[in-house]
Amino acid sequence: MTYQILKQTALDKVTRGEASAGSTRGRLSTLDRVLKLLGITDDAEIGPELRSSFRSTENAWVSHLTAEGQPMRHVSNMRSNLVWWRNVVIEIDRDRNLRDGVATPFQQAVKSLFEKHPVKRVARLTDVPHDMIFGWLHGKVPRRSSYPALRRVETFFSLERDHLLIHRHN
Image (cartoon, rainbow, N blue to C red; front, side, top):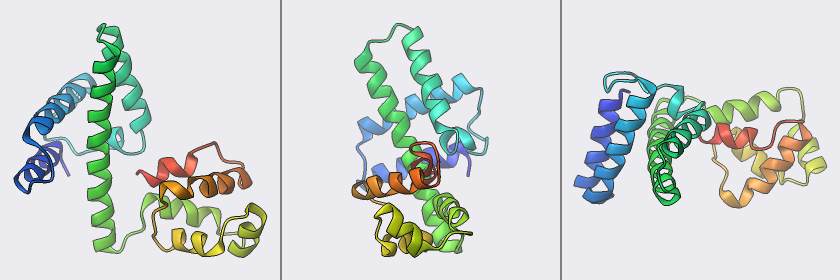
């Protein structure tokens, strides 16, 4: 999917009444500025900058705005716009993966952890319901309320904090 298609998807959301025209104009402007900062054109495929490397893109964007001397409120709003674009990409990717029967990055990450470890044993040792883990293995996306359980699994496997959460958003 290219950035041009992504932008059209945002405009389609306005047409369907899922987003306001004013907010979308601001978001389009933010995306254009981020792409310019990264040296990416509209006809380029969306890559890791809005997926697996989003945190570095976000940090570069915030640093750029701060270096311009933008007020913190403006920086916060521009960051929120960028996060909105990332969420749209995640939604599109998830829908495509479900339609095509492909495992999501989160599902792949969880499966790789449990290749050599019995789910019920890890569940017992981490105090995470085994049904929750089986759900993740079968494509369910963790809700915010289950983040503490996800973090206990990360700790059990000696992963960095939010390692699985990062995959959840890819």
